[in-house]
Length: 150
Image (tube, rainbow, N blue to C red; front, top):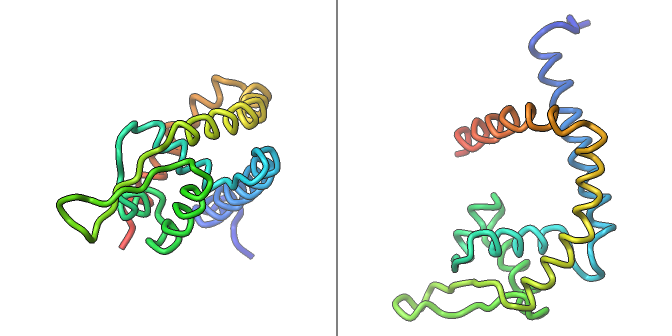
């Protein structure tokens, strides 16, 4: 039996909690999103709204750490819904550019309005100061994982 104080046990306990929290958060937020919107749709719309500029599908795939095929599928659904505009690159016919549409901004805002109270309640119940203390650690962990990618 392993020592519960060992670094390996600590790592397993930490990541077990993170994975379970991630799964529970995804399930709860997915249920709260407006009908027809998936969490990955919201994430892309939120990202595009935040940057306020065009991105290629490849850039978006890289940002979300998904395959180009997965991103293409998400973008196709968002385009059919009218939430994004996809235009050709006039200098390179192989490339396309993606922007959020006014409809996409409205859909993102509506989704944010439904999930913000859920997220705020979690932060309130944990305590804003504890969350502020935890954020730098989670950011550092994310950066470490990004640095380990192949």
